[in-house]
Length: 125
Image (cartoon, rainbow, N blue to C red; front, side, top):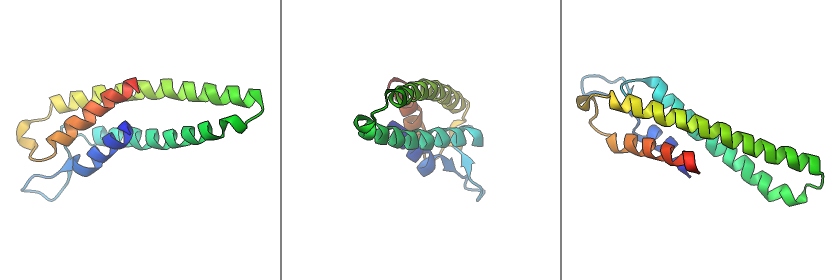
C-alpha cells in the first residue's frame, strides 16, 4: 500500500511546470532522477508484493522443503534489499525537497511530502 501511495503521489503531482513554460519538471529541485527513483521503487515494490503474496498463497501446496527454503530466503533477502532501497529513496527525496525553492512549487507540495513520508513508513513495513 505504501509503495502504491509513493508511486501515485509522484505520478499525480510530482511533475509541475512554471507558468512561463510548457515543459514539465520534477517537483524535487527539478531533479528528474528523484521522481524516476521514487516511481521506480514504488512500482517494483508493488509488483514484488503481488508476486510474494501469490507465493504465500501457494506456499502450503509446495511439498519440496528445499524449494520452500529458497522461497523464504528469497523473500527475506528481497525484504532486506528493498528496505535499503527505501532508505536511499527517503534520503534522496528528503535531500532534494530540502533544496527545492519555495517559488518553484505552486501545487504538489503535499504530494511531495506524502511521498517522503510514505517512503519512510515503508522502511518499517
